[in-house]
Image (cartoon, rainbow over all chains, first blue to last red; front, side, top):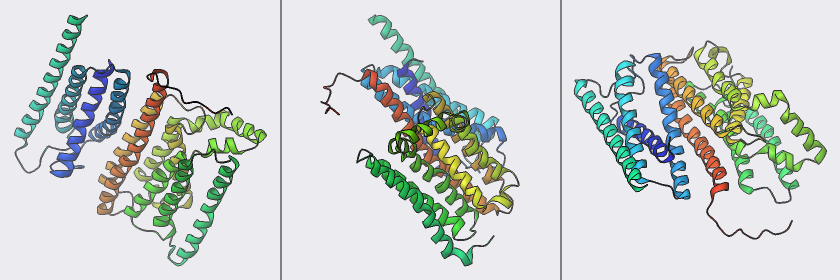
Length: 145
Length: 254
């Protein structure tokens, strides 16, 4: 993958995972550290994504610094990558982790369907915006060359 | 096992035992005639302090609950090893030893068993695999306050930190170190949630929950430091070939 897109995508995954942890686990206390319906696969998926998102955030920032150092930073490609990374992670979290693997729910003691819809529609919008940016970035590069 | 009557004696023995690596390191530093970075020495001392705190919090002052056990393992198995590896004792020894002995040490380091032990994947399995054996099997009951357990946790933690940071000669490739680090961090996080949900033998559920959360987030903090140091090393290596033209500082002839 091209380095601008890679750096953006990694940071997107990292930011989405960080917001999930900071806002929904720590501030709102909507998400649970563990709930009794969590499957073994859910625990493994959570562990892998949690670890990977830590690494992705840091690696993305160093990649960003490297792009700036080489003067090859392309903002549109980077932001496109970021939105795609964030949207893809949020969609995976909202469908596979919450629903399929039953890691935990978005919120407890409420009708959760509306929350699930908002969560996943936001994910798809992020993903679509990111793809649109990447496509226009490619067109611009083609026009220039 | 109860240590309550022997707390003072235990602490005394601990302090004397930790004086050995401290004095040995400082003697080696004095052999380098001021060429050894002070921050490395500071890391070594910090590592020994963390080790003393970890041992003092749990094993020496009696057999406390699971939360204190987890806290002391964070210090003995993660914080202390990270700082000790940053102290770079092996490169220091290679510099401080007379040529003949340094060569002998290099031969040992290059031998197959030592290279295998020092590989990131082996070190990760010894480190996190050992924790899985301890917490997810009935082993926890008989073993959890055995002195050899703490030795293992420290040694495996050091091997892992040194392998990830590339603190010994001929480190593994960055990609390998990064992949192993992510896998080990994941296995650590999964185990922490497993402990939360399935308390080890003899541990009350409430203690296991607090201990599991401490293990999860405590591990995160130390691993974040490892990730930053690894990525920074990668960034610097990459920069050597691509740095913009800059006036080269005049080097004094040596």
